Length: 219
Image (cartoon, rainbow, N blue to C red):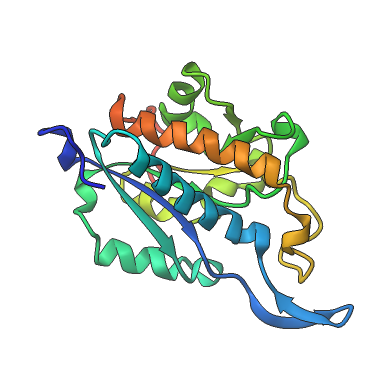
């Protein structure tokens, strides 16, 4: 969606999720199909719905690019390809919001309708979103290093304030055939997508996220 502001339209907000999962693998209880409903069909659904919502509203000031990445599970292959063949120069990227695993509530994030942001303390993005009432909290499990475990890290290392929105509560179906649609909490997911729409609108129209001192990876 091309930005409407004559100056800010040259800045880009990238909203993405990965659409690959593990495919066919070791059977568990006779099931060898790893569907990945939470990881990460939930995120891809969010990207599509955010795009739909942004198209219904006024044009954003900054340009927004929506992308579905492949190969995240085997080394961020799609994202690495995008970095080499960007739809707009990486230097023009104002922010990246990756969305991964929002299909179930996380009690440590506040339960249904709430989500967390990886690497929250690294940039101004999280505090800016919270200051506008968007129900996003810091990652409650920094020991899991989720900031480094999704597509956002490749953009962050390229200098873009890039974070992942999630509500993964370490459920036992992670990377198992049991990560099925029947286990998705649609009310929770709908609420988180609503929060993500508000977050993307703010990043497109409001202050540009900035790294905190020492927050950018590799610095």
